[in-house]
Image (tube, rainbow, N blue to C red; front, top):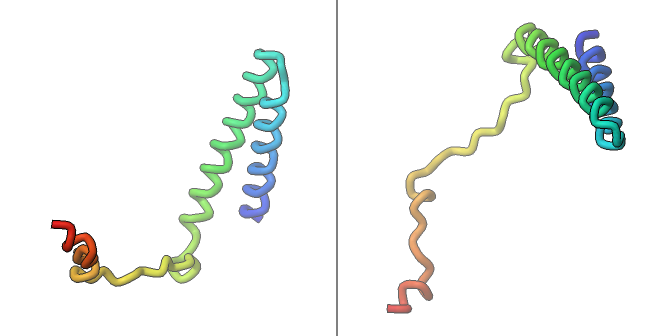
Amino acid sequence: MMIQRCHKWRQKRKQLIDQARQTADEIDRERLLQSAEHYGRMVSSEQGKIDSTRTPADKTPIAEQPVDAADEEEPFPEFVENLK
């Protein structure tokens, strides 16, 4: 339910930003952008609530690549060393 509400607010925010881009009236554009900013704050707050209720098992792990010290310092290719 919270995720659906968050998605709806994101869509509304995008719609307001698109409308602001298309309007020529500066006052109307500012009003639309302020409304979009309000929806952005609502989304951010709701996303924080969603993230705080998720357990670590629910979160998708980022694949960690092992860091090997030998891989970090690759030698120059042979043709570069032969330029001397």
